[in-house]
Length: 129
Image (cartoon, rainbow, N blue to C red; front, side, top):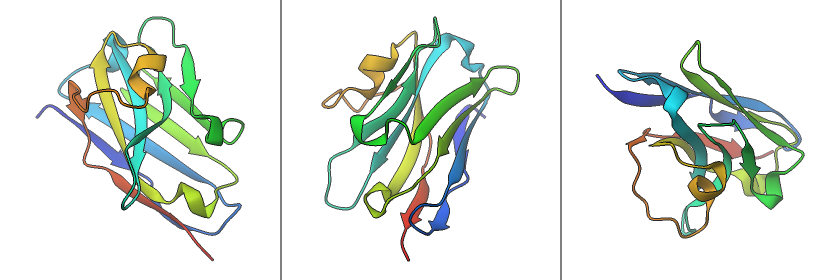
């Protein structure tokens, strides 16, 4: 079955950390730009952190710079999102997307069409006392 599956979400206190994982099955990630997007209730979808397929360059949303890190392990067909110093405004459903040969900048761009080669079902992250 061809799919992306996220895991690692949960409830964490402000200042805490989580690591999200996105595992691909049925295809290999090495040709794909990978992005972590999030959507909170009543808010627009936004790109959080993305990595290009070709040179592994990265792009981060301004509000998460210095706190979040995206990394890819092609051998494990997995992309991670390390989130530190979490804030209540980080609360959202996080999901990963894959688009062949996409750049990090475009994959994370606000207003990008909501169409991807692959998209996971999402994992809930809640930051609260």
